Length: 519
Image 1: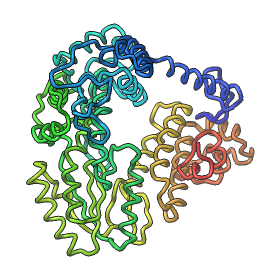
Image 2: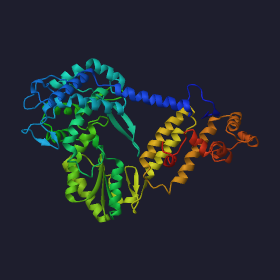
Image 3: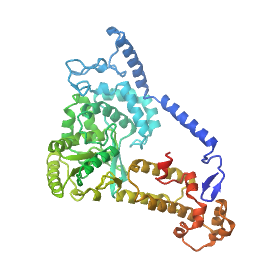
Image 4: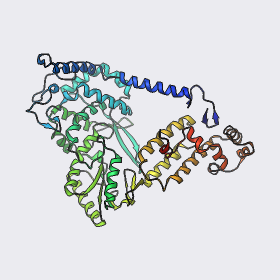
């Protein structure tokens, strides 16, 4: 049985059931998915490369130099001048940096079989939309099995040209839109492979106060650090908003920074080509790019951190307490006077040295409990809660999904709702909800009941639905009521028909349900 717009109804063969058969199907599907994942390999050339790599490793153990293969990854090319081919590791002559051979980070090492397989797994896991070629993950995989050899030859020859990125607008929580530049899947694979080789060169030197787009760091870590500053008495915060940062990055400065640790000219040229890849708008026009690193590609977050690392180092030199998550910068101080002084000097430094504009309308200072950081509100006693904007965004999504005029079935709504609300809860579950939980819980469930009431449409439809949901016969006449849907949503009859336990049982949960019964 399942809950539909018409009340309780037995599942059809194509429906979603919570019974044993559904659970068994789910386990089988997940098992099949896992097996498929294991069988998915990068393009054919990578597989040959992996065999060569295995043979090379075995030969290395046998200490048989005469049997060692050429460049790892299956690409038999001549080493470029001044670049040692990576299979034997770094020589003593080569400069080491954070465990990586700076000279050996090259096109050849980027194209190593193991690196490409790891990159493909990451791209496939992240999924994402298709690029300008319209090809998704599966289509690109089939394409690369046939054409990867030619792609690799172009990369090694320094002749590869990235495709244009597809422009896509996504709404910002505070209003307006953010323009993403979505590369096609093939370019996402190559960017991810580059990212995996470049990241170790910088990661150990990045600031401990930087949290965005870094391994084993998250927004929650940034919030915990901010809590520590507040508990230490730094209850004033300076918020600095970099105006359209990802669209304003200076290419020349960024490439100079990358070139400090990447010596291979072909790889540097490829990175530069990715930065300059044109943006294709929805109407098919292509716009040249002279600045910026478009969001949407795997390489952009690392390049952003490289660019902003100078700001981190400057703030560390000044001895201030701060957290940075991507282009969100929050500096914590103990007084209003200090906040005003820090705001003016840091804004001036950013515009002079980073060459990116600061949004002065959105930058400012104030008490921590009047500000928001990454969707959280920091109280003066160190507690955190969801910011007013985050709550408003949640309510807007509730209204949107639980709009009785939309055409979703109850099962479709359940899937979409659960996906959204579980993600929301996983992000905000560390917040202190004592002030909001009761009111928000009642408000959300009222919207659910309202939606069902409207979907039942006619008096007879409402009577039949209430009957199927176990409402006593003497109360069924309420189907003819003239009360509005919002008023009926809080009526005791609707509470009896759609109890909280009933809604939960059929997947119509609210955030705080996960606290006791996590999915």
